[in-house]
Length: 118
Image (cartoon, rainbow, N blue to C red):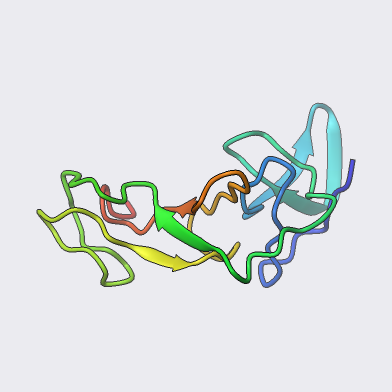
Protein backbone atom coordinates (compact mmCIF):
# COMPACT_ATOMS: atom_id res chain seq x y z
CA UNK A 1 0.00 0.00 0.00
CA UNK A 2 1.16 3.49 -0.82
CA UNK A 3 -0.27 6.18 1.43
CA UNK A 4 0.40 9.90 1.27
CA UNK A 5 0.20 12.37 4.14
CA UNK A 6 -2.72 14.73 3.52
CA UNK A 7 -1.80 18.04 1.85
CA UNK A 8 -4.72 20.08 0.47
CA UNK A 9 -2.38 21.80 -2.04
CA UNK A 10 -1.18 18.52 -3.57
CA UNK A 11 -4.15 16.28 -4.36
CA UNK A 12 -2.99 12.90 -5.72
CA UNK A 13 -4.83 10.52 -8.01
CA UNK A 14 -5.74 7.41 -6.05
CA UNK A 15 -5.43 3.80 -7.24
CA UNK A 16 -9.19 3.83 -7.97
CA UNK A 17 -8.71 6.79 -10.38
CA UNK A 18 -10.39 9.43 -8.22
CA UNK A 19 -8.79 12.51 -6.74
CA UNK A 20 -7.83 11.87 -3.12
CA UNK A 21 -9.57 14.90 -1.64
CA UNK A 22 -10.80 13.25 1.56
CA UNK A 23 -8.77 12.98 4.75
CA UNK A 24 -8.59 9.60 6.47
CA UNK A 25 -7.61 9.43 10.13
CA UNK A 26 -8.52 5.76 10.71
CA UNK A 27 -9.68 2.75 8.71
CA UNK A 28 -10.09 -0.92 9.54
CA UNK A 29 -8.63 -0.45 13.01
CA UNK A 30 -5.53 1.36 11.67
CA UNK A 31 -4.99 4.97 12.73
CA UNK A 32 -3.20 7.48 10.50
CA UNK A 33 -1.47 10.34 12.30
CA UNK A 34 -1.01 12.55 10.40
CA UNK A 35 -4.08 11.81 8.24
CA UNK A 36 -3.67 10.45 4.71
CA UNK A 37 -5.39 11.13 1.38
CA UNK A 38 -8.44 9.00 0.63
CA UNK A 39 -11.27 8.50 -1.87
CA UNK A 40 -14.47 8.33 0.15
CA UNK A 41 -16.50 7.04 -2.81
CA UNK A 42 -14.47 3.85 -3.17
CA UNK A 43 -12.93 3.66 0.34
CA UNK A 44 -9.55 3.79 -1.39
CA UNK A 45 -6.50 4.88 0.62
CA UNK A 46 -3.80 3.92 -1.88
CA UNK A 47 -2.20 6.54 -4.11
CA UNK A 48 -1.73 5.49 -7.73
CA UNK A 49 1.73 3.98 -8.15
CA UNK A 50 2.35 6.05 -11.27
CA UNK A 51 0.46 9.35 -11.39
CA UNK A 52 -1.29 9.73 -14.75
CA UNK A 53 -0.22 12.44 -17.18
CA UNK A 54 -3.32 14.64 -17.30
CA UNK A 55 -1.65 17.33 -19.42
CA UNK A 56 -3.38 16.47 -22.70
CA UNK A 57 -6.66 15.20 -21.25
CA UNK A 58 -10.07 16.84 -20.89
CA UNK A 59 -12.70 16.19 -18.24
CA UNK A 60 -16.42 16.48 -18.83
CA UNK A 61 -19.05 16.98 -16.18
CA UNK A 62 -20.81 13.74 -15.27
CA UNK A 63 -24.03 15.37 -16.58
CA UNK A 64 -22.50 16.46 -19.92
CA UNK A 65 -25.15 16.45 -22.67
CA UNK A 66 -28.01 16.03 -20.18
CA UNK A 67 -30.47 18.63 -18.99
CA UNK A 68 -30.72 17.86 -15.29
CA UNK A 69 -33.24 19.58 -13.05
CA UNK A 70 -30.89 22.38 -12.11
CA UNK A 71 -30.89 24.15 -8.82
CA UNK A 72 -27.90 26.24 -9.80
CA UNK A 73 -25.75 27.22 -12.76
CA UNK A 74 -22.42 25.65 -13.59
CA UNK A 75 -19.49 26.89 -11.49
CA UNK A 76 -17.47 27.33 -14.71
CA UNK A 77 -20.20 29.32 -16.56
CA UNK A 78 -20.33 26.80 -19.41
CA UNK A 79 -23.89 25.56 -18.96
CA UNK A 80 -27.11 27.27 -17.97
CA UNK A 81 -30.42 26.26 -16.44
CA UNK A 82 -32.81 24.37 -18.74
CA UNK A 83 -30.02 23.71 -21.27
CA UNK A 84 -27.84 20.60 -21.69
CA UNK A 85 -24.63 20.67 -19.66
CA UNK A 86 -21.67 21.56 -21.88
CA UNK A 87 -19.00 21.84 -19.21
CA UNK A 88 -15.48 20.68 -20.14
CA UNK A 89 -12.27 21.54 -18.28
CA UNK A 90 -8.63 20.51 -18.57
CA UNK A 91 -8.25 17.35 -16.47
CA UNK A 92 -6.94 18.08 -12.98
CA UNK A 93 -7.16 16.42 -9.59
CA UNK A 94 -8.28 19.84 -8.31
CA UNK A 95 -11.64 19.57 -10.13
CA UNK A 96 -14.60 18.69 -7.88
CA UNK A 97 -15.25 14.93 -7.73
CA UNK A 98 -12.57 14.33 -10.36
CA UNK A 99 -12.26 10.78 -11.74
CA UNK A 100 -9.51 9.74 -14.15
CA UNK A 101 -10.73 7.27 -16.81
CA UNK A 102 -7.68 6.30 -18.88
CA UNK A 103 -9.60 3.90 -21.15
CA UNK A 104 -12.21 6.51 -22.06
CA UNK A 105 -11.97 9.66 -24.18
CA UNK A 106 -12.79 11.95 -21.26
CA UNK A 107 -12.21 12.06 -17.52
CA UNK A 108 -15.12 13.11 -15.28
CA UNK A 109 -15.89 15.70 -12.64
CA UNK A 110 -18.93 17.59 -11.32
CA UNK A 111 -19.51 21.23 -12.30
CA UNK A 112 -22.41 21.88 -9.93
CA UNK A 113 -25.07 22.03 -12.66
CA UNK A 114 -27.44 19.34 -11.42
CA UNK A 115 -27.80 19.74 -7.68
CA UNK A 116 -25.68 22.70 -6.71
CA UNK A 117 -23.39 22.34 -3.72
CA UNK A 118 -25.63 22.08 -0.67
